[in-house]
Length: 142
Image (cartoon, rainbow, N blue to C red; front, side, top):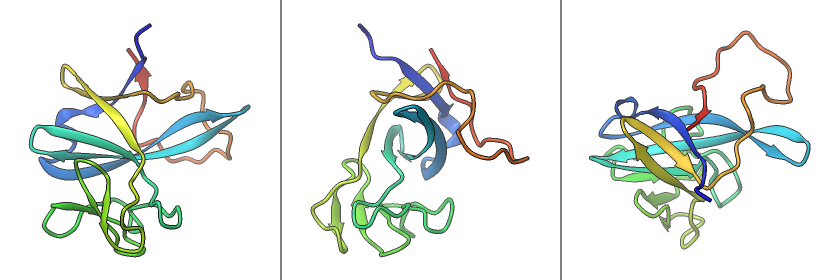
């Protein structure tokens, strides 16, 4: 059986040397919980990781939307400055050197950046209080 793929964004939504964060939803037991991820692009290559530093579990973008170092050559944890290789997610400098970000498999489907290998919840909302804010992205399965 083929794995289900989930469209996250259009290929041009992520700059050529950039990264964008998304909060998806997944099931944990009988609850739907936030699933923050980041999609990083280097030229024509796309990578996705769970937005969580292996050091203390903090979000990589301690300052929202800031995932890369100034040279756009590494993912940087905004809390402790750990540096991660973009292509592998492996930390090569900082308090978690040798550890890795949790990688998510990326599939390019036409002009969509999709992820696979994860179980996402249906789009019926997270089990949390409603706000007037619109979600950053709508996830649909192919």
